[in-house]
Length: 180
Image (tube, rainbow, N blue to C red; front, side, top):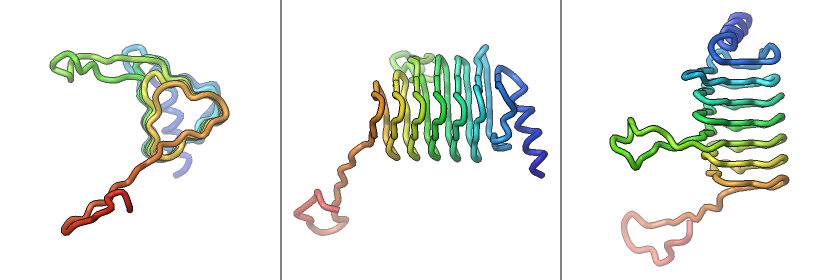
């Protein structure tokens, strides 16, 4: 059965605007690679994916060598997403280079506002993180789980979101609402 999933992975890579420099045996059988409107997906080396990864491009999406995408990763490119070498992306991470243009109505038909996303080499993006349009992440960076990233992150940094939890009683009074 393993050979069937390898054949299906090769068939997916050979169709549409997907370009690869070598056979990518690490792509899960249910990883979806989709291009439209002249978009391209360029795999520069080995790509390892787990279940239910979805990579879509109507722009230019480039993934470097020896990258790993864990379960449920979603990459959506309308302009340009560049991912460096040796990048590890945790489960359920979303990377997008666009927002809906919500100023026009109806929003569904109003198009997108795009800005390039660039991720350097040797980057680890933790589970459930979101990388938004216009983000630039340098080399040797760790993005903590659940972090929403926008803007420029320089080399050699660990980025995470601090969370302030509030507790409130369902019934009765609680004098200290800032404790867990």
